[in-house]
View: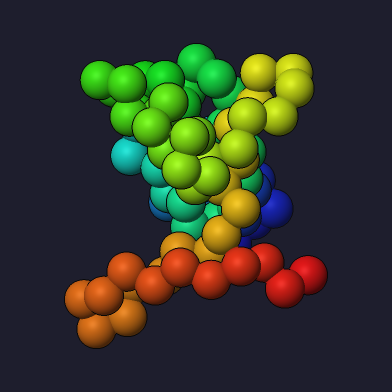
Length: 89
């Protein structure tokens, strides 16, 4: 495989597409599973109907300036259960 083909394969992998996509499910994966902060616009699109405000009030989402939302926990799915844990790093 040539270098160009390798670069195309890396850039078009599902993981890299998720890191770059504004699509709401991709934003959810980045925010809740990968610990990557989301912009306020992306989070608002993801969390419609005032859910972002309720998650913020509960301490599940943190609003950090300038206009960034973060999720202070690790979310994992194990045997159909959603498990939250804190960041140990």
